[in-house]
Picture: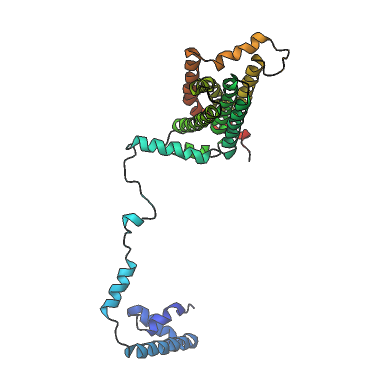
Length: 308
């Protein structure tokens, strides 16, 4: 037999009607336990009715105030906690491009910036201490190397934990990659310019334009080579190649003790440090080809190199 325990409060309050009330009444006639519970609920209902009968009804203004408190009101525009984007996706392209560019700063690891800054600062100090006429050579050896290593550390697939998330966003991967390359090169060139200006101020008589030309020329092909190897292969390849080219250049100009390497072989890197139109065009073609092919590479090809 099923006891109507869950319907006894409604029965005692008089809310059951028709067949439901008749079924509970018939059950209570033959079930002393449920009848006792029903009498308890009836006593409670009677006490509540007697207590509320002496209370004055609440004023209508109380319900109005409650409804007003429960109805959400929009916050003023000046205090809106979460801004909303109401423009079209294709609108304000320059503003959107600047946003993508600046957001890359938070995705590039701090050792990349630290290493580039240390190399450029160290190069500026060595250039200031170098004999007269050698400052340009020193900067030409340090600033391009700093740029190439920074590009490898910032643009290489192995060093990009958010790559899978970035691939799921509406911004094309090529745009993200180009923004990251632009940000790194812009920061490196700006640091090189500051070092050049500081060196010019400390050594009167030195031409700033000549110093900038000395390091900006090799920066372009060296960074392009590092970018291509880091994105299409792995960052360690970009770093190793940049260091190898730097060492070959240092040997070719006699800054390091001679080795068994052929002078002719060492001089093969000289065009990278005195680039002409052909070298600069080849560097631009390398960057364009990398941007075209890089996003086509599967992420799984690099997964084994990503630290867990």
